[in-house]
Amino acid sequence: MTYLLNIYKEFQQQFPEIAKAYDELALKCHGWGPLNEKARRLIKLGIAIGLNSEGGVRSHARRALAQGVTTDELRHAVLLAFTTAGFPTTIAAMKWVDEVIDKHKKS
Image 1 (spheres, rainbow, N blue to C red):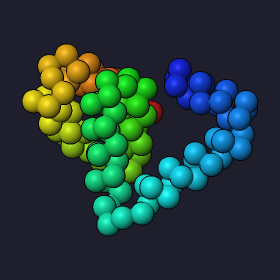
Image 2 (cartoon, rainbow, N blue to C red):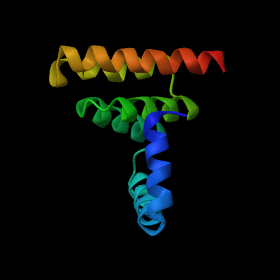
Image 3 (cartoon, one colour):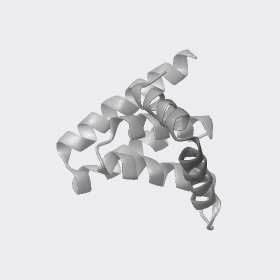
Image 4 (cartoon, one colour):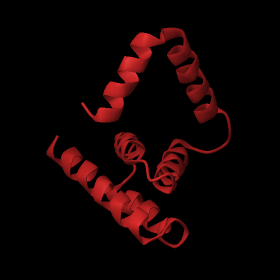
């Protein structure tokens, strides 16, 4: 289990009502508008890249792969960050996404 998931599980145990409300809000936001699942997953990946959030990038890459997003689509989303988020952020995100892809292929 990854570091971020462990932290969130601890948060859920310590503050179950808050975690439940957060999860419900996340589901409502995710499903609200006209964007399809693939678009939502790639947008969330892009946000995580822009925040330089390793846990977020890994999590959203895993979720995107689980929803049928291709490896080329994931890498394209990372490359789109290059001119907005910069070289170091993009290179780090590409490494994280490639590691998720490698692990996904092995499972």
